[in-house]
Amino acid sequence: MDAPVAFRVDPAFRDDVLAGLAAPIPAVPARWFYDRRGSELFEEITRLAEYYPTRTETALLEKISGELAGLLPAGAAVVEFGSGSSAKTPIVLRAAEPAAYVPIDISGDFLRDSAEALGAGFPGLLVLPVEADFMRRIALPAEIAAMPRLGFFPGSTIGNLVARSAVDLLRAMKETLGEGSRLLIGMDRIKDVDVLLAAYDDAAGVTAAFNLNLLHRINAELDGNIPVDAFRHRAIWNDPLSRIEMHLEAVRDVAFTVAGTPFAFAAGATIHTENSHKYGYRDSRILLRAAGWGVTREWTDDREWFSILLAEAEPPRFAP
Ligand code: AVI
Image (cartoon, rainbow, N blue to C red; front, side, top):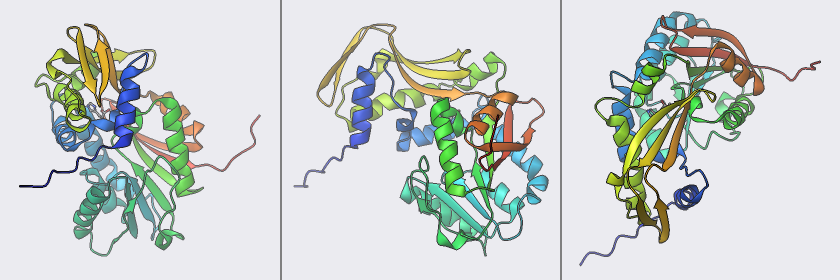
């Protein structure tokens, strides 16, 4: 007989779900979307006709790659916040021709695999993956101590954080990279609400499956018995907060347990699962400035749907 497989529960996931479902406004942090199935579904989202951000940002990076080539002095390091598994990283590495590339990611296996795959395409490039949570200040590898640095944070992932967390993250990036460093960051623009809603509630239902997968994950990993068919995907535009919100809405009264704890949701009640903030021309500058980054360039596509900003880590200054 096979020995029983020991089931490992991630205590941080359990704590977030139990506290989040019991909160006055029930919510589960969006980072828990990304189990294996969730990551596959997100990849599928990026290829959807309605989901413009990935396609728009990649095309914009290609378009400005000539200008990016002049950005970095010889012998610089590109530090990417994220694993660098996307098509965007090679565009920047080809353009900037750095001496070193440092991808930072919390998921070690994924990080090493993607760093290896990427390194193979850039012989001579020093690739130094760092396994760490980039929400906090990180000690960069000694090999790049004397190199000028360009941080790279594509994907408009900054938009998934509320303003105070986004500022904390941008400040941590500044501390990690050091004064005088630069940051190349992708941010999604405010646009027509119909375009935004379609991007987060696509006709094929892939985003709905991505959102509902969170409930499957809770059932599988936290011994839950949530009837997933009792919930539906909702995407709404919250105008005063300038963000798309994703929710899971109960379509009928429903009761279930997670890790032995009982929960009940009345029909129409929701679990808030994600925010995706959109930024106007001034908003992005205020956000970056609040964390000590001064914007020196901004590029946008013809429709002005997506921005890539270049910012410089400013020294503290006296101000009136
Ligand atoms: C990862 N992040 C930038 C995506 C976004 O657009 O906010 C996540 C996503 N959620 C639904 N679709 C895509």
